[in-house]
Amino acid sequence: MKFPPFGDEHAIFRKSVRDFCENEIKPHVEEWEEAGIFPREIFTEMGKLGFLGIRFPEKYGGAGLDWWYTACFIEELPRSMCGGVPLSIMAHTDMATPIINLLGTEEQKQEFLAPAIKGEKIAAICVTEPNAGSDVAGIRTTAKKDGGDYVINGSKTFITNGTRADFLMLAAKTNPEAGHAGMSLFTFPTDVKGYSITRKLNKLGNRSSDTAELSFEDCRIPKRYILGEEGQGFIYAMKNFQGERLVAALSATAGTALALEETMRYVHEREVFGRPLSKFQVTRHKIADLATRVEASRAITYHAVNLYNDGIECTKEVSMAKIFAADASRVVIDECLQLHGGYGYVEEYYIARAYRDTRLMPIGGGTTEVMKEIVSRLMGM
Image 1: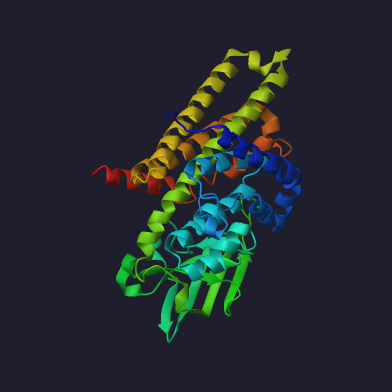
Image 2: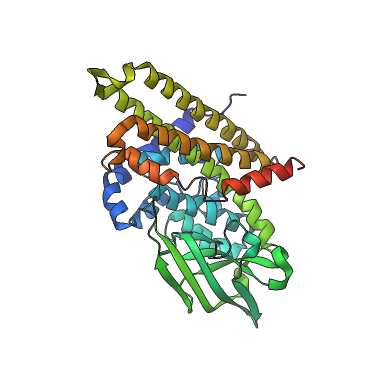
């Protein structure tokens, strides 16, 4: 079997994503980076093109495809020439909505998943808190039963799409004394009384993606909004993180490859001491080293995609892929900026934005340190 199994249909799909990114996103990036947000219409347009429900059932508007089509999608998003818009889209497609497809009731899928696939509703995953990031079990937001409702109190932070999400995939403690066994997940519509956006965060990178702090004060939601079984939220979240981290590895690898591509173009054009920068052996060897890192990143990530797509337990491999891809992005893009010299330090060149945006990779979706702890434990240490 060909590996990776990309064929003509994948190429057609890949081109449609690239065309959209280059024609509908790239021309507006500077404006949206300055604004700290991009139009909702991007979601609806991507929904019409079938980009927001690649692996979801056709019954809800999805395409019913596999993870290799997701790989094509994620790999083309960097062609928008920014990290912010792709981050918001991925938070919607591969962080917040997959758990609804996996656990949701028919009613929840019709109310939340179907409109999310169409791009009519924007989703956000809502786990991280001011005192609980990678330590998911340490969240303090509570969901207490009161008659036929749950009453939500607490706060969240670093929530991508947080300023305009129509619904959240919310993690809260239904039994605070039970540790990780007391956590549950909910679908949470943001028009509920008591819910508020505390503030929009001003970030180092990914600036066109809105990120917010959120507050919940006696927010009432009906019991029917719980996802799966009460008390199983930690287990569900850990499973959901595998897809999120795999997407992060794919995104990091693709973004790094694009930065290297742009740098190769630059060193061919830039003249130093009367000849192109690419004519210097030190430059060529540097490029060879960086290209090797990109290919290694792609190989380990595709291996994880293959396992995950086949339903094989691969927590270790997914964690390794995120570790390696995040580190490669940080190292390669730093060296690419160096090859740009002073021009790499000014905003008119793409590499400056790539440098800022990629710094999130070893942090978001579980830090590199947490990934290493997962890998070492799965190795029996």
